[in-house]
Length: 241
Image 1 (cartoon, one colour):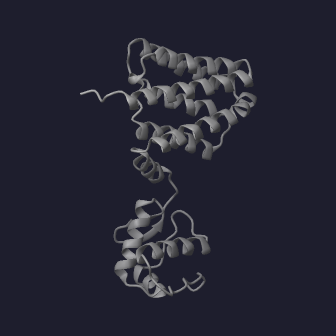
Image 2: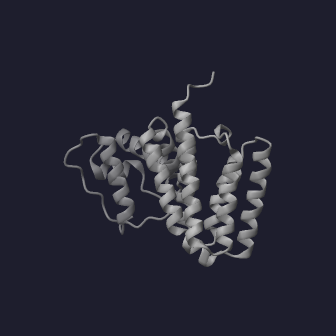
């Protein structure tokens, strides 16, 4: 390990476990460690920082919970392949009681999708259009039966931007969709007009098929305004026993 850059000893230790976490992240970045690369033993790292093994162990556990590190029993600690799941779980948990943050999250979703729909229109294939129409057809069937179509809704938004082949965008769309639905307790069965929600999606697809950027953007805006109204109504109505 002689070629690895050393960690700088801590001069003071306020919130020690947090400081150790930051030092570990800096160590990973400074040594350009990638997913699957091992870290030195806990004892070695603790000595470099001038902290006890317990503090180092707590920091490693905290970074495991964030999806940055993983411990392989009997082998050691390794850098973990990045995943949005811990971020998603923490975001949904943190937002669940905050109406203001839910509204902000909805607005981010709206701006993200309306801003990028033009690129989708320029790139989308007939196969993607067919997949979108298939999803909206299933949404209509479920809406007519008064069944939840949350799974189809999420799939719709994934497919709408799949042609851009932007993995970060796809991950953000999933994060915003799932966190928003968890945080707001939004349920399409709470919508008194589920066919209106289906129609929003249907009209978005048809505007995309016509390559009508203005209309596609307007339909997305209408869709998010409808979601806002449903959530506002559900938040003001007395809870159903």
